[in-house]
Image (tube, rainbow, N blue to C red):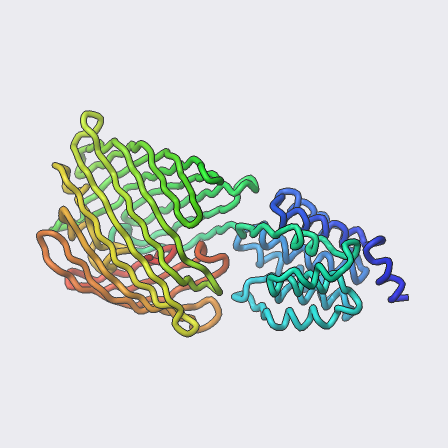
Length: 452
């Protein structure tokens, strides 16, 4: 009976399995809207039959790609329930193989275990086993060896050419801390695939004892696209004797040109700063270019990232003339299970400008430990190295050291240590706590994302 079902399995499939196949073929060839819709149908059509429960379990695994970073909290237990209700047949083995092959290793997946499970069901489910082995190896030979009518949705997508999906969107709510902000709460949202069109967007907002603010950006896909970002906040900076409230707001529309790992952006700029009640308009233009040669594996970057950029405040639309630019070079090297990261950064500005627009180091990113605003000059240069290492599950530790030179105040060494909560998808879902120590101060920072 089982052999007969196997022979007819492609021609007569369970409705939930058919929906799963439609979803796989659509999603992994780039039609993510239709893919997610079909996967949700597979969940609804799953019933008590082994293949129905297995299809539900596999669809829930795939919906992790189409949902937010918190989706494992509800899809995870329901996947377990579906797998337990499936039994021990080949369909249930297939659903377990998908867990190990498709779920991030940070959530407990074992790629080698997934390949072994797929191999174990090649006789019972040859087409589906072949697509999993091709997925694991990146080689479509196992699928091509199967008759076309026996290929499942995943296999058909792999033969056509898999379109790598952007991954889930990130939603984070947590504590933030720093001298400039005080203690508070922040909300962090990053979406890499708005409208299933690879429109990237982000929103950040925070309320703290010494600051409040928010901002976001949108960027369309394609070789040539549009970009829009904006930010408004009230925070503080150290003027040498005490903390001074500062308001800032900016809007930056522009265009983006992408050529492989290279991306260049430019456009007009509208911005204001308020320092101790005095308003300064810095309207003009902005531009940046970046080369991202990094690869990511198990939350660890490897390779080089280079960025350059600048701003012009143009009279008479601005209250002052300023020509500023920056350059940033970052390198990443795996170190055991961790990563060694290094950074060199320089910034300079010409023109007559208010003190608040002078280049600065300190705060949560460059020379952590120095009070924000306390080190300002017409030019700055900084170098830093950081070792990040996993210790248990998503918990990482970090140690960093370096220094900065600032025009008019000399060289300032610094270093410190911190912890990281590193969750998939990377690099969009990291929360860090750093204690930085410098010759001009000590600061505890809680923030989203790495310093560099």
